[in-house]
Amino acid sequence: MCMLSNDEFILLDELIYLEWDAYDDESVEELVLDILKDDNLKILMDKMSNCVVSSTKEEWERTLEQILTKPNLPKLVIINVENHKSGMRTAAFKDSDENVIVVFRGTTTIKEWDDNGQGAYEYDTEQQIYALNYVNSIDSDKIIVTGHSKGGNKAQYTTVRSPKVIKCVSINGQGFSNEFINKYKKLIDGNKEKIIAVNSKYDYVNCLFNSVAGETHYIKTSFQFNPLFYHKGSIMLDYDGNLRDETSRSIFAKIINDFSTSLVSDLPDDLKSITVDGLISGIEAVLCKKQSSDRIIKIIGSVLIMMTYGKYFKIKETFALSYMVIQFLVLPLLFWADFINVEETKNKELLKDILNKMDKAAMTIINKLKLTEDSKNPISKNLYSKFDIFINKLHGAVESL
Image (tube, rainbow, N blue to C red; front, side):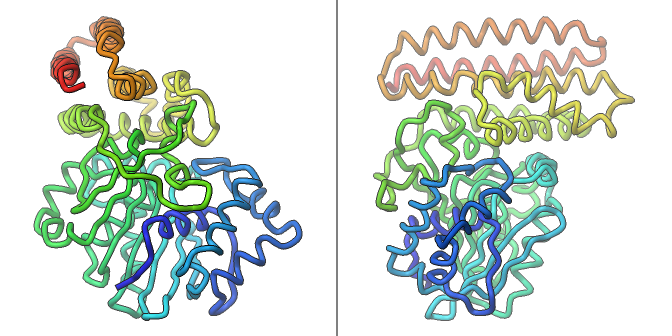
């Protein structure tokens, strides 16, 4: 079995974001030393998409130096690097015990945004199938898979579906649709013990949709001014590259998870697809551009228009209703920094104030929904019913503080 520690998996998942190439049987140590030479790091940084793990040159240098200090990472041999036309990037490494370690990169390109959303309402997405085919093409039955964010989702997917995978470590990976859970229940039950999820305590993305991990660890991280930056894998490591202390799951995370999953699962198919595509893409856009999360509604509106005009411009009622549904889904995110503050300070009065504000915001959305065509009104009633359950659960959380 692979002896890599969880902090080593996180560092590998960081390394894949730099778009390096490798020669046959190059070691990770040789690769990293080469990247640190001359202006090579700057050249690679300039090639990167400005997205989830965009870091300063100093931060990248620290990450690369941390890799060199680890007991196992420098010895890994790179056996393959692939950049798929879909935007997927993956690499395969071999350790001294002949285990093959496959690393899937998280989302960095516009091509991958659609696939992110599809994972919340389809059985299998295009990129998940590509990932599965990649794993199955490897001549080994001792494969370990890992990845951050969407890469973690692909790693979990391949573990469920490929008998070649013996272990998976997912870093802040997003969950799966109800459709996926129902279709692959037997495979999930038979393989979930192979899957380890390592999540930032306050990462919002891993709250979304259904987890299939048999083992989950929540890590206490440094404070982040933008609450969406808790999604970055590197913040789970200290200055020396060691995993920070483990903690419990956020008391609000499961409540938000249940709310988002329930809300999406009951939507009609056409509304479900456009809504989730818009939501996930909006979150990615905020992460990519490092903008404040309080602008996410406006950003999602822009992304939604850009992504869906070609598909949905003929059904503008669906488009308008989708935008309203997304506002419901995003409400917890808009108050995510406040929820974190409440959990850290145990401030019950602040939580009550947040819930009052959320309830008023929900009523504003409902009133807008009532202005849409009458046939959509049952959906608006269902939305508010789901939100009411969500608010009641949050009120219940007050007592657990």
